[in-house]
Image (cartoon, rainbow, N blue to C red; front, side, top):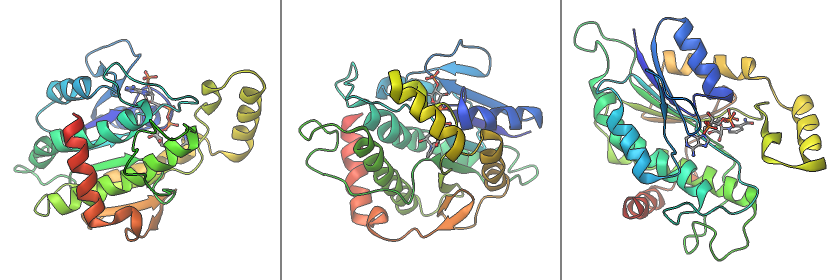
Length: 263
Ligand SMILES: NC(=O)c1ccc[n+]([C@@H]2O[C@H](COP(=O)([O-])OP(=O)(O)OC[C@H]3O[C@@H](n4cnc5c(N)ncnc54)[C@H](OP(=O)(O)O)[C@@H]3O)[C@@H](O)[C@H]2O)c1
């Protein structure tokens, strides 16, 4: 029995993964910000670095796979109680903090001494391959006009850098880091919109987006059989290069140094 942690495991793709692994008999811990807590369901607002670190401390000390899937689309700029821009805090900062805090638990892995289990892994569900630059002087869109897609695409770039930094900083780790862009998946993005925009997004999703049931199997294949490379990237099951500006090693370390100071 493996232990799998899924942030954002209470809806959409994360929930699909939780159902899959629970049905297969594994221990799966799901986290979300609005869920009713239970034995393997934890409530944590991951746009708060303090709550993110509390969640990490509450998790088992042996973990086989960490799925980072907590996300919320923000049509307008939201400032958190700690004064952070919410998309950046949830999509970038919390993912950095969780990967670093849980690495020792992943390295311990389940059963590794008794019967070697699958390689431990972090799978970060994000927009890898879609990143479009970072503004280092304004990472949280405080001075630039806030546009939701700018926040999302910069977050995609930043998540590629998180993967690149993880592989650089932990060259001896057994834990593999996988960046995974599921492509467009129908998980109810229209919930973030009001009025006619809501109807439009819902209609477009039904036509253009894949159902969760189709998005989950390529992800479980990676979790069950992690790629050998310390860092890899995929879009809808197909490998992507981990080179180019969004994987630039000095930028990766620069970002994580900035993130450490924010937590
Ligand atoms: N769906 C797509 O088309 C698509 C495309 C590219 C990438 N992705 C990536 O895939 C991942 C999953 O996407 P999805 O569409 O399946 O998401 P989703 O259905 O919108 O579900 C988001 C999950 O995140 C949780 N969440 C939101 N805010 C949170 C917070 N502050 N703290 C803790 N948990 C929070 C939600 O639970 P609560 O509401 O209880 O907080 C929910 O469980 C995301 O990382 C997304 O970036 C998705």
